[in-house]
Length: 365
Image (cartoon, rainbow, N blue to C red; front, side):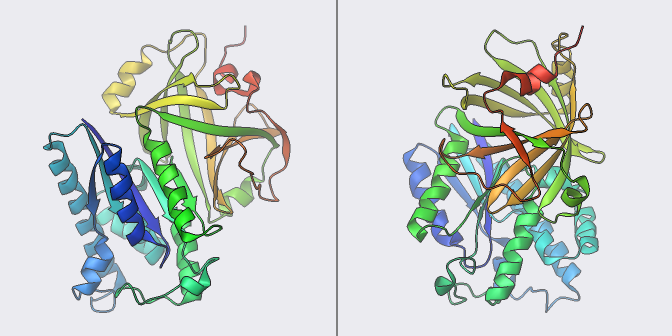
């Protein structure tokens, strides 16, 4: 059984309700069983439990996060009983959405109230897709009429949209769907991103990598749309032409481990077939025993940065003090990339084998 849990999030009046119908129709035709977890905030607010009816906003948020996690647990439990091969659980908002409605101190208390940590709670979802509010770029379509729980005006909606993007930045598969096209095209873009992530059999990713000047670390760490992630990547023994690795990814004392197997899907090396699975701690330690002794573990600091509805990953290595690598996954090979002005590109290295992590890990004799 294959169970995938994704989040559809976004600012107010972004099109989530219609998107759910598109997801149901398209994924069902592809053979998936689709389960939907309704938005918890709407359920509570329309039922009379609101930030302004409870004692404090934190009192309300603690109720919301607990109910949200219980619902997700029950849906996953039910999914495991279903005689289906491919199940997608679609969450109408996920845990990190709550951060946009709290101070940092309140959010820390809410996380503690469910005995969790940010890394595990954020990365428990396989992918996150953010629909940008109509208040950004499609103002004429912004309305509060179709959701009784919506109260934001245009300016508040834009601020909330920005806060939600900042809250989810750091997730390993986060995509932002903007309003640069018509609403139908926006939903087609969403579906293409979801289908690309799921794949019929395997995920095929298109990525671009660039060598950049050593970035301004203070700017990155003070940017609300940037999140620092620590990564340890160990390469395993694998057949010729195949890359096999395990990765420990997290923040502070909290980490999640993955195994990834990659094979090239085209001659240029832009597209690769990628199969990834999350590991338990025991599985991770067991796979480390099959480490490729010709390569050293790669330690790097990754800065996940959202800019102009694009999701960049900047890797800073301890053995370089004059350069770094920036990477972005694209939905199309010819898609244009817009870099922040603070990032200075030296050259593209997508197809340069010397800058691949597997090459950087080679032990020097």
